[in-house]
Image 1 (cartoon, rainbow, N blue to C red):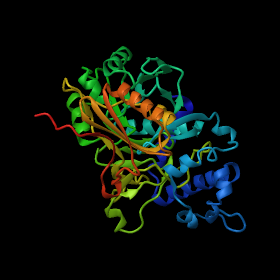
Image 2 (cartoon, rainbow, N blue to C red):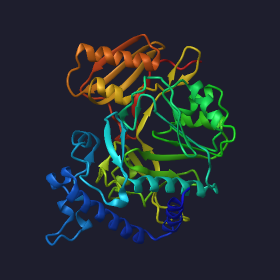
Image 3 (cartoon, rainbow, N blue to C red):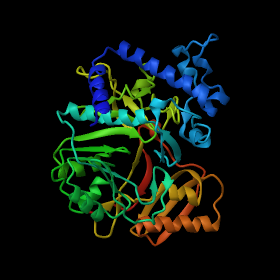
Image 4 (cartoon, rainbow, N blue to C red):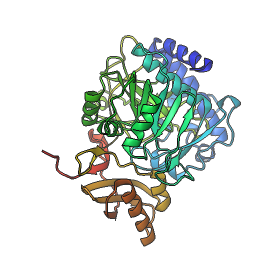
Length: 430
């Protein structure tokens, strides 16, 4: 942890003890800076005038108009992706780093992440570890796609080609190579901290990984199902942190020390809360505004998830509201003939390059039979369909691939269910 991250971490340890009215006032100051920047520097906000409810005639910022600002959906953000980038940002936000994500439903989104956003993410993770009386844990393994797309940008590497990337004590392990190769790379690093997707860790376990020397495991990037959590806990007895985060916003909420709820990262994002007691009894649409997203401002942004709010904050952290559950992207793990389970590591960027679409779902009907369902932007050509089939076969090893164009894919997150982007229709083994 460098000096700047250390200072930010210490500041977070203080702000978590603030009263709710104090943290709210601090949040409103950050929102004002972001909204003024977006109105001046971002074509989308300047041209649509959607931030005008926040400004009085004399130019004074007024939070009273916050809920009159339209919610920015993931699909809308994708449609206006070029106009959402700022013409310029303040020097303290630089350098900007280009990234990309597909989120809960598969709708892609390129974005620029600021230096302060990256700094805050590191500090938020450090605080979550401190809640469990854990300090800096190096080396770190961060598992993510490397060989097919990096930050949402196509890589010149061939699919499946392994690349070793490290940044100081952080080592990136490619989830797009076989689990056994990932495990070999992790064992060579001997990490004390591992950050990965919940659906990736079971594949490591199936390949014989025993989490030797690991002091903490952070699960992020997707919702962790009860099945996955049980598989992981059976192999790893150390601290497990569920981190609700998106690539474009950074940390949104992280599992508290008691393991019963997720504390909202109030110093990183502003999260709209449902109004009224009735609304709190059912999953509410997640609407967040990351304060430091000056490169690609996302104001009242809906990444596609739903959440249930807890009754109140933990006594140790009164400034941080809590969530009892995130309803987001879920999905079954697929099955191989040898009985092992796996997540199909398919490149979202390459799928989009072949045939643009707004959402998709991959279904395993048998060991070698798969169906890709997608809501295409335009009807796919025979060549595009052939390309999609090749990519699915490459990711799954299947030989019988079908591509279905559909008008919509069932999304029941309002009812407390996940958006299933991977569905296994094979019967469970006895």
